[in-house]
Amino acid sequence: MRLKIQHITRYSYSSPVHDNHSELRLMPINDERQTCTDFSLTVTPLANISYYNLPTGRVHHFNIRPAHAQLTVTAASKVITPPIDSVAELPFGSAGISSYDSDIVREDYAEYLMPTERVPRGLPFDDLIQIASSAVDAPDAPSFILSLNRVLHRVFTYRKGATDVDTPLATVLETREGVCQDFAHLMIAICRHLGIPARYVSGYLFTRGPERQGVDTLGGAGEKALEKLGIAQPADWQAPNGLVDGGAMHAWVECLLPDGRWHGFDPTNCLVVNDAYVRVHYGRDYADVPPTRGIYAGTATQALEVSVTITEDGA
Image (cartoon, rainbow, N blue to C red; front, top):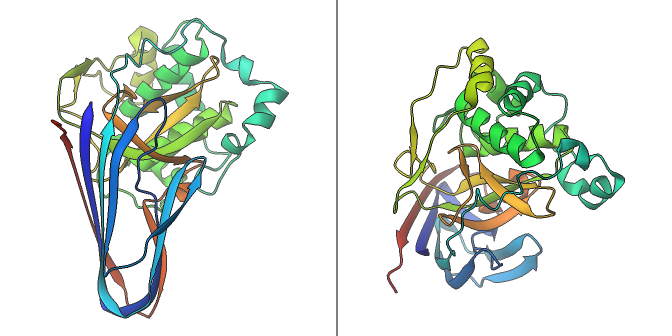
């Protein structure tokens, strides 16, 4: 797909602020899965923008010294994502979850196995793991993770505004509702609990375009396990009409599978990541990938508005 993305972020301050230093993680990654053919970044008030590259993506930064009551950042991108059959690429029939129990995995991928403040250890995941396991017979690792993706989509409800960036994962488990960030953190926490390296991905999801169909079903054993939690039998689920992205940046998960590759899963939408997704940055959790982050001098409070528009690029 050829996609055009416009991402506008506007901060309004209750009184003028100064010495406003900001970091931005807004430029799509260039790799074998996608090509960013064009990217521009404008800031109002005007500022000199610099950047540095990390293995996980590019970080832009700037500083505005004069007093100002509003800050607007506009990022415009053009990205090409080649068509892929993302489910067919999963290495079904490969090793099971026990294959991750090795010193090589623990040492080479320690960064994506350790707990973080947003993805802590010790949360009650047993029911979710049991449901995901019961939905597949003698699961290999890809089958289990695909099942887990479906379980989280079914058990938890997406509700915009249900949580914020500081809501603990324990609260999400209790209320069974949240936003894409929470779905991603839940899946990461469960995978790491089982020794499966998993990382948080921030990017964009194109929610319109050619139909992509899928049925949200777990099979007989999985459905019975869900019934014990009071989760109703599903209706057929279709994409992209039912897709959610929150009207801003989206979040999903990449898991290391036994083929040695990272594969993307979106529990919010019950999808394996395909060409409608644009990767911008990845890390251990949301704290590594916020689209904007900054500090300023002054006692003002701030209000944030975000607008993301994604269209197909006919060029």
